Length: 182
Image (tube, rainbow, N blue to C red; front, side):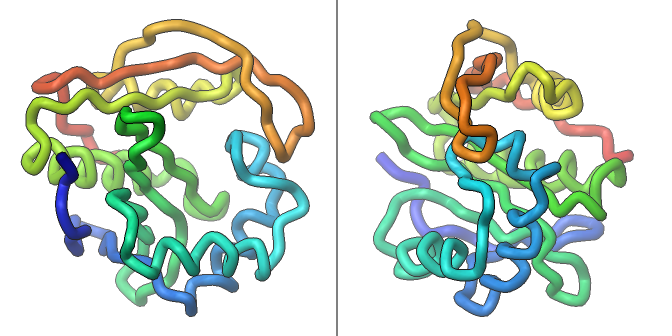
């Protein structure tokens, strides 16, 4: 079972929409910032426009069950991503935000809205996620939304080129809490 087509979601300050190939420059700009990529497992450093296009082509083709939302502001500026991906038979949440938009509550607003819509379409589905142990802000966001820690492991970070301690989390069906927007 899949959640169906990806919707457009409007929140108080954001629009979460499908990606376009024209988002490549904004994605490359954000993911060329090591402060962002160091917290992501599957993103290489350095990261350039071709890397963005290599990711965008299958995402925009529409053949995957995943939801890959572009986080945009009122002027349609691409500032980040919230994704729910089917990997190894389990649904996984991932996200990142341009560093210049950190600490404004945007990620809480975006992730909360995506999870709320996903849980309406897939009410009996557990969502898995996790954070690197040196990313307490991301762990706090997940806990605020109802995620609970389930374990700890080491996973490879392409950007850091090493194994990194990873805190695994899970959101059980019905456990989603609405984030209080900062």
